[in-house]
Amino acid sequence: MAGGTAEDHRALLQALLSGHVTSILDKLDAAAKPALRPPPPEVSGFRVRLDLQGAKPPVWRRLDLPGDLTLPRVHDAIQAAMGWTDSHLHRFRTGRDYRSPSFVTTFDVDEGEDGVPEDGVRLDQLVSAKGDTLWYEYDFGDGWDHVLQVEEVLDDRPATVRCVGGRMACPPEDCGGIGGYDELAAWVRSGYDDAQLPEVFGDAAQARDWLPLEWHPDHFAVDEANAALSVALAEPVAVTGELADLLEQLEQRGIRSLREVLGRPSSHEPTDVTDDEAARLTATYRTLLDLVGDGVALTSAGYLPPKLVEQLAKRVGITEWWIGKANREDLTPPVAAVRETARALGLVSVRKGRLAPTKAGVRTREDPQALLAHIAGRLPLGTKEFERHAGWAALAVAGSGVPAEQWREQVSDLLLAFGWRTDRDSYSRPPAHSPTLDVLEELAGAARTGWRVMGTDLAVAAAARSVIGQH
Image (cartoon, rainbow, N blue to C red; front, side, top):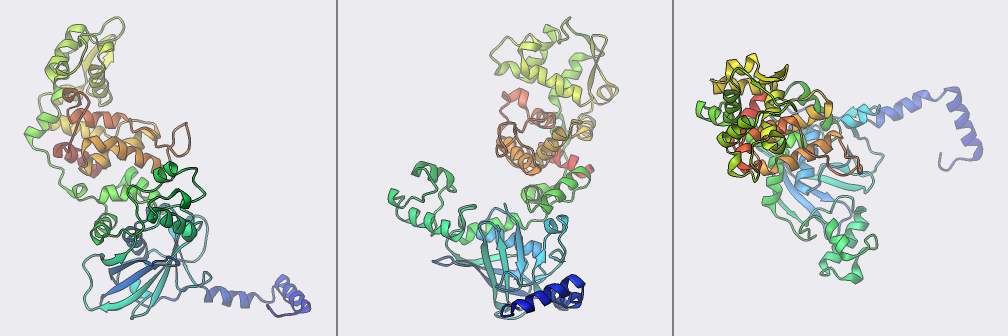
């Protein structure tokens, strides 16, 4: 109707209002849906070139992809190989034109959009021969448009996604599209010449703080791309219940952080803990239960008696690093932390001014394996939603085998992904503190090491995984 007269336009409008052209609209709607080939009887693979449109010099990656890779996994591969952080929405479409038939993501479906879901659609249903293309758009604000073109059909299915070549670094996220990227690249290539500083920054210091660490537009390393692909495409360990719900919620929003934690190789390791390891992990709690015996009277203020505080501090190693006298619970926080986590785990309780072991405490205090099993069965601790989310995050991170000094940072990252924020602003990561994390640190020897647990404790990681596996 672009060349139609005013009368033509009025006639079309009248027909639309009267419902006489619904069949035409139905045909247009049907034509807008992407066409899918049936999956081939034998799975092969494709060597493809992935180009970021509009980038000069070209920013590209060459990838070997299994033909049966689903579109969500192709999305993961593109994100990892390019160097994006999966922080925005995306869309696959079948042509260069933005009106070309496209697929809807799980986020689109949740928002009520109709269309062909990308879930379950395989790459080999969309491309089959040299020269075939698939288009991928990322971040609808900055508008990063990519084209994936088949360079070669491989006889054998690649065992995994692999990057075999590429050029140039991925643009920084949220830099303003190709125009903003060009300005940043020119400034960095100039040696950070103030005359070429992009106008969006107040000064060079602000710009350098904003840029990814050591980012240079001309840098690309195939080994780094393959390392990122290995992490991004690793299948997460099977989870159920509340943790599975959290994983699903994040994946529906296109956030991969929890999936990547659960996909780390150590997350798939066994959950067995030897008798010696169980004795070491539970030593602090068994010492407390031994000192409490059948029960001990608390002070009038509700604290442990000074003599017991001294004995506990000495036997678990607190006196080796604590600068105080370690004879008053209210002035010795590491002792208070041991009692508080033991109470939260259901090992001790207070009644009528006495601290006494619970039935579980009596039953397990002479049996490290039984005690460790009881502790695992109580985790994650807390009834409030934040406490439980923080607890699951702590268990996932610890179970993935990362060093203890990285636990809190990674837990905070997951809490931010879950949607938790600080009162200060909507961007700062929430603190990682949770009763579950306190217990994991006690198992790792916090009382003995001055709360500075370091390195990877394989037994603690196995204990954390056992919690994940039994829910």
